[in-house]
Image (tube, rainbow, N blue to C red; front, side):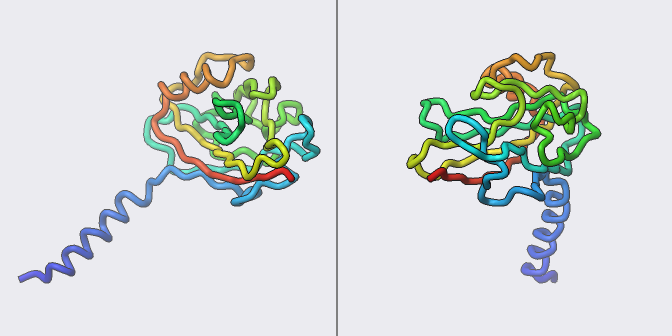
Length: 183
């Protein structure tokens, strides 16, 4: 007769091996739980360096044809949050963006990638810049594995429309959260 505890342990171990290995994951070598002056926007009363973090992702699902990345602040006092970064049409063989790739003038992002408008009204990355005294804001950076090579949008698309196309083409997504407060 088999030991039921041993069988249960083996079943749990095998499910961890089967399901845990292919977890779509986003990481950053330059950003941890707190954003810094490096990521902070330069404008709107903020004086940061406005450098997008280095990002890397792994274990995209089968059928991924491109990637997209967004950065969103749900705590912005706008009633609809604030989009800080919308980049899409990242080729499926790219699994990282280097620090400051969100600066279109630096030419560090893949040439096929489109960096669309943020709520600042500019293209590319626009870092955290919460109102002084408004408390800690949460910044959600998400990578999307998409089932299409291109969203067929251009850099003038607003974040809501880009989000609609992302939502309808997403196979999987992974996120990081960083927090920032401006004194």
